[in-house]
Amino acid sequence: MRLSSRGARLGAVVASLVLVVAACSSDSDGASDESTDTTAATDTTEQAVEPVAPEDNGGRTEGDGELVIGAVLPETGNLAQLGPPMVQGGAMAIRDINDAGGVLGQDVRYITKDDGGAADDDLALTSVDELVNNENVDTILGAASSGTTKNILDSVVSSGTVQCSPSNTGSDLTEAPDKGLYFRTPPPDNLQALALAKAVTDDGHQNVAIIAQNTDYGTGFVRFLEPALQDSGAEVVANVTYDEQGTAFDTEVENVVSSEPDAVVLIGYPEDGGKVLAEMIQQNAGPADLPIYVTDGMQSNELYQAVDESDPAITAGIRGTAPSAAPEAGASFFPDAFAEFAPEVESPIYSAQAYDCVVLFALAAEKAQSDAPYDIALEMTNVSRGEGPDAEVCNTYADCKALLDEGSDINYDGASGALDFTDFGEPSAGSYDIYTFADDGTYATDEQVVVEG
Image 1: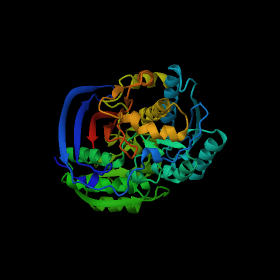
Image 2: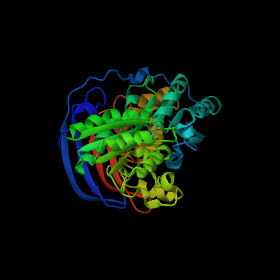
Image 3: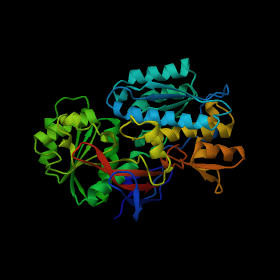
Image 4: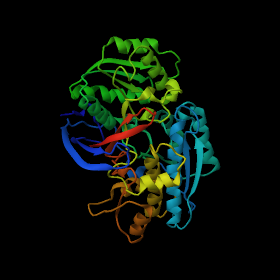
């Protein structure tokens, strides 16, 4: 199997991608030792925008010795189901950091605000304003959706605050005008598109219809998914968009059905995607009739409630991809520790990525011996990958801080795996869960795919 670079631009130059498939237990609790490697050659492509040099970042240069982290994450809106695992992932990191002595000898403070869940950008802007101007935060964890981040990024950057998102996957954020202040721990969607295309074609489907919400998330994902499917040998027989705020989707679904696909990829969020699924079922194109694939936006144990709240089995058989909640390369302690820390959180999606954002903030401040945003931004990439070949790998804040105290160069491989930020402040590889919904409405991971840039 070969994949080309049309779906895989990452960093300044991408030379190759390696797909490593590791079979996991069906209940997501562990992984077997079986794996296969697939190497995919790509074309060399110049990145249109150069990364900001670390020393030229636009962060505020003043600090007061206390690291204050604000979170702008969904409590309401279309992505409300993603809020608890990310908020609690950040809170667990704060606990672990403070238990290990804090940052600069002081406990770290953590303040959370609502980002509107991709449904209220004014609320997200208000939250940023309150955190920056009233709470004097040094860094911001969030936002959840790529579209919300685009809307708040100018405010964050103009305030000189460092931002790290645990769930932004939009590929165009790689080139965002962020003055070197924006980072993210999940890999961009150009890599997830390869994982999803592999899942679809490995299942034997060759005539694929795509239906996606007409948003930055939906159309941005399709931009990479369509060529990835084609490069995998499939034909895209329909490429349909819909209004995520819409209430009727009969015409869009008719266009999908009339293309006579042997599989459908649906890219949306539970609220809107559930309505599209309901219409697909009405037109005899639901998961009982046709293989359906989704992405991280619809990875929710409550998805069935947006389709038919009385029938959990309505989503049975739907498959999807999402950044791994417990990647094989991730810190082994995290899944069980998070379940114990936040037992009320039903799904761990993006909890590991939120945990890592907060730990990176703290390690960068410790390495810089400063809580000034300028100094934190200067060190974020360094602590994620090390400054040289002899950097010591560490997996917890306590262990990494001990190494920094000794004067060592560190490479933080965290809960979400080996981050190794590119010069654009994002992971150079992505670990993805391929999951399937069961008759009780819940999903379970079947395998993991690692896409390396």
